[in-house]
Image (cartoon, rainbow, N blue to C red; front, side, top):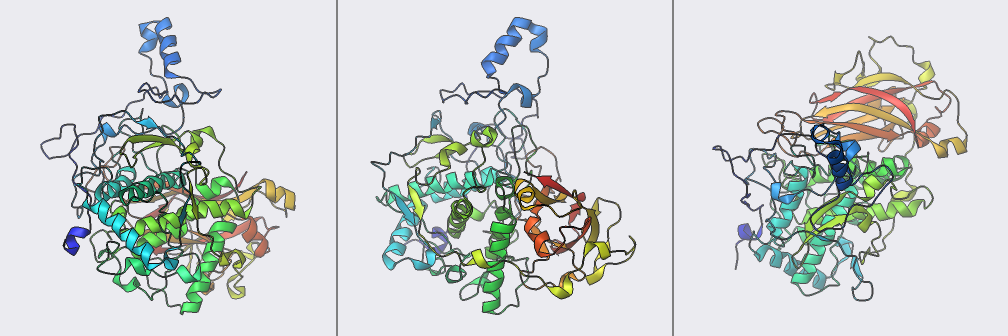
Length: 596
């Protein structure tokens, strides 16, 4: 029988096909601008849109104008399709890995075949799979799940269906191995933007199909970690059995059952009682799923198009609870908080797939909360973004976001479980709240709760810092006006090294942020960075050494301003409080804008 260390798969060391330098690192191609186009590899072409141009049309036009026109540099965003295009996996390069990583690359096994277009499963011949809540499964289910993971781990690392290869998928798409097709040298990143939800849905879909194929059960659905409800707020028992295929020794030992998860985790252990922790978690879920997610752009995250720098801005749920659950689960005694605590290694822990199944479930739940406003994005640049995955046969498949909007069409559903957080609207902490129009402290004067008034931006967030921010409206808006435009607090130019676990909280109109109660209404939201790659010794996907991420945090304010009775105020007081990674986060500016 295999030893425990043999059963815990680590990312395989895949040998990339292109040459390496003497140091063993494959050089990246230089960054150039190129016409982004419809594919010429036998795949179905990109859909036509009025503002898009097929590459063949562009080349024909250049040919007619002569060689001098052909030599003219054409901005890719104007001459080509704008969706982030499928990466060319043959050009997969070294990932930005921390020095502790025991891998050379996260690249998946190469394919000699061209990718095929995704074919939606036929409802008549494809059984509907039900993904169960992990805390509610039977012993027979656990045995079958163990058998599936064991079968994946038994496959050679060069098999794209293997557990090692599947774990590497997350690393490749998240840590700088890929460039978007048409933009060599630029990093492709599936976090901190509107690609987050659809990428992970695709990832789990193929993982589940592979697992079911290996155990001969096409009806098998992977479990979801139901951390948004009291019964599921502990690490599921099936993952903590040390003799199980689902166990990973690289987890935080302090957080084994019966410890309750902290969905707002900041690297410090909560002092709540169990009942207080449950109440806090439910308020966090309400804040992220309801208060901060009134529109598609705020739920899914900011637009990320071909040619853009990555990390345009995360959606509310990607920030929290997604980020804190990763960090809460990873082992702080490992050099880079492996496994769950770092994106490069997260896929090595079977718990990752249960965590992301619940994240995927949140997409479906969110759409059911408000059928009128909670809709999928209709922008074709989101719908036509695409990814490459291996299926269970294994074939290389090109799949678009538009292919995965309906889980019934993908032939899976989630077990129906209660949503107790729907009624857990945060409450005011009277002693901590102030009206913005009463703020008369000079800029140099310290604000309440130990916060210092901000000077000129940008600032390094090494202490609690407050700033008075004017609102774009100075009078109370009608219900219809608020429904048509959301007032949004924008924390711009958030900079942090990629390998730093960081979190800061954002309060509105607090005299003393430390007095805000558990899940208090004065807390507008938070920013979380889960480490991914190494921002110092290695170059990142843009070929620049030492550069971290630069992103934007957007927090919806309509509901909060109602509860704070601040809808008629000309300005609000915003307080930024570092919780993790103190002194390692920079802030470029703070403003409020109206968003559809």
